Image (cartoon, rainbow, N blue to C red):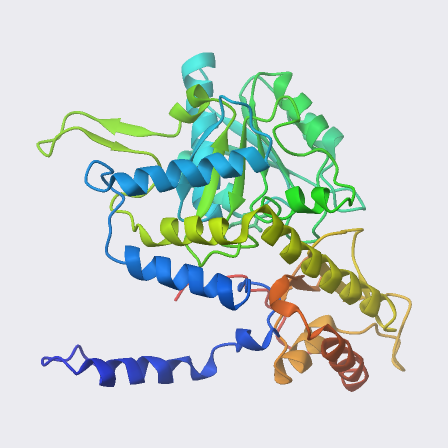
Length: 421
Ligand SMILES: *Cc1c(COP(=O)(O)O)cnc(C)c1O
């Protein structure tokens, strides 16, 4: 279908757009575990009304739109407060977790170059660290040392320390890591980084808007935020369990001086002095404004309520999976991420364990969507308030599907987390 010569009426265009969504997951039903974070009707309203106000604004130049400069500094300030940043803490809004990570890796490389003269930078990450760190290394010319996790899926600090050297610019920990939802030993990772004056980044893209509230609810959380000495920077996604629509994350640095290493300025262009805080140029005001509105609407109490329902949903799901013969939860994740694998001790008539990918297909046929991941083969769930009220139905469907796929192995072993088209 070529591009139409003549324009079409708005109603006509929008009807076709609506129709295109027919095959998309029905996240409103709560049957999607991840990708969508539904804070409820009033959170939608806050976001949608803010989006209408800021649909056309451009945050490229806050001289023209001072409100967006203010919005950024307020959202960053509130996030720094939640993460126990010191007075000196400073950050920027970005388009998402990946961009926050890219910015923090760049800042680590630049600081090491300027202060330590490092020209062949190296970074150390556990194999559980998000793929965005490898993307950063690829883009910014950094050698990555990827280390195995321990049997509990947490980063192995001894394995990491074996790669420490004079060219180390960055050591990474996650709170929690995405695949199994466990929190890495951040104090030990920060200590390791400090021993060679490298940066320590904590990836709290998933946990940044959960762990502070889990702690307030009285559940134990291992040390991970700016209270850990030696943490230089943290990434926290508002567009995940911060419940804002997609396109907004925070990257925080312990000091303004550390933050300066991520910015770009150029004074040799016919267009004038050019400065940019992150990887974007022209930059939509919409996600920034929706994040501001959602955070203001919820407040600490609203987030605590959403976190309480999230934990109840996840706890019930873990309990139900543990009670279903043939499957099990990997790792001792206690928050909102669940990795479900086969139970190696439950075998079918041919002596094979359950195929969780076949299980995922059967669940999908009933409208339940998990991401597939591996190794090891698992079905991943990011549980949130989105899934409130459906967990019992899910566990029923799970039991039925486990029975249905006994002895079935699916051909398709792909674990696509994202697509290229
Ligand atoms: C989602 C996520 C990222 C990447 O964030 P995007 O918003 O998808 O770019 C990084 N780290 C962790 C732990 C995540 O869960």
